[in-house]
Amino acid sequence: MDLLRVCVVGTGSISDMHFQSFANNPNAILYGVYDYSQERAEEKSKKYGIEKVYASLEEVFHDPHVDAVSICTWNNTHAEISIGALKGGKHVLVEKPLSMTVEEALKVEEATRKYNKTLQVGFVRRFATNAKLLKSFIDHGKLGEIYYAKASCLRRLGNPGGWFADKERSGGGPLIDLGVHIIDICWYLMGRPKVKSISGNTYRKLGNRGNIENLRFYKAADYDNGKNTVEDLANALITFENGASLLVDVSFTLHAQKDEIQVKLYGTKGGAELEPELVLISEENDTILNVHPQIDHLTFDFSNAFQNEIDSFVTSCLTGTKPVAPIEDGVEIMKILAGIYEASEKKCEVTF
Ligand SMILES: NC(=O)c1ccc[n+]([C@@H]2O[C@H](COP(=O)([O-])OP(=O)(O)OC[C@H]3O[C@@H](n4cnc5c(N)ncnc54)[C@H](O)[C@@H]3O)[C@@H](O)[C@H]2O)c1
Image (cartoon, rainbow, N blue to C red; front, side, top):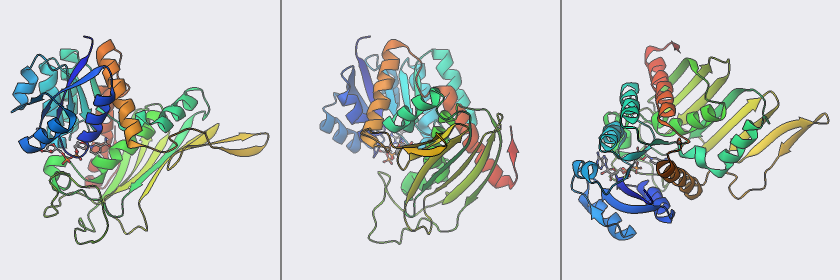
């Protein structure tokens, strides 16, 4: 296989990042598109000069010209489309979260093994330049043993409405949508430790605040604020078998002064802040040093991270190398997310 022919399934807001990145990759061909909305699929096919607009998922799965499927659909369809594509002999890039439940995630894992294809989970933050650089410092022992991490992704106003706000189709609110990213990046940088126990809380106090005027925010392709069955705030303390712990909070809306993103890791030899901007903290000559790397992307940049993610996926598919965000990591993160929801529901610590 010289070039990878890709079909993008789901042509809403985030799909543009996939289309642009595949279009920029010299080893990939944007071959097809499919969406429930034929109109939206046609629009993307014109915009990106894509040959084929499919009428059904079955057509995609059975087309021998398609080598890989990039899934940008509602969360409730990630597992089903992944399994169908793998069964059809396609490689899969599936947007985060891998699925809505651990059971579904395990089924995708089984299919990945059975059909022996590449499956990469859309943990895009792993591919951002600042994260890649920090990972290399960590791998060289710069932080020592990382025993604590802390991450926040707080939107004061940012419930995307539509399917995102419908638990049946999303699996939850800011925890499964935003928490998935910051929990994954901390867990990955901490060395992927096994989870031991989780306590967590979710809150539904403010609604979707569809009444707020004159302030823009990210919206689902079919935005509507008529239904909202998801939490608006979640927090958790996750403890790992090696004794390390991770403290997280995320919101779709909160009476906060402004949006906030923070990802911080603390080790025995040094610390690091990944967001809002990469900084390394160390001690030398009895002096504390804050080190500011001189790089182009000190913070998460969508175009940069998605390009790296998709380049890495294309290489994995064409060369058979293991993806940087493999299926088993998708399953572990689903266990953590489900554990937080369970701890919140049962109002007690969940142990593994
Ligand atoms: N990696 C990131 O940073 C990031 C950012 C935003 C969204 N996402 C993820 O991407 C996915 C899509 O989010 P979005 O913001 O583009 O949503 P969106 O509402 O803008 O678009 C979703 C599209 O998928 C289509 N669709 C849904 N289920 C389908 C199915 N089974 N078959 C065909 N088409 C289907 C819808 O018609 C719609 O056009 C979600 O899983 C979301 O979590 C990831």
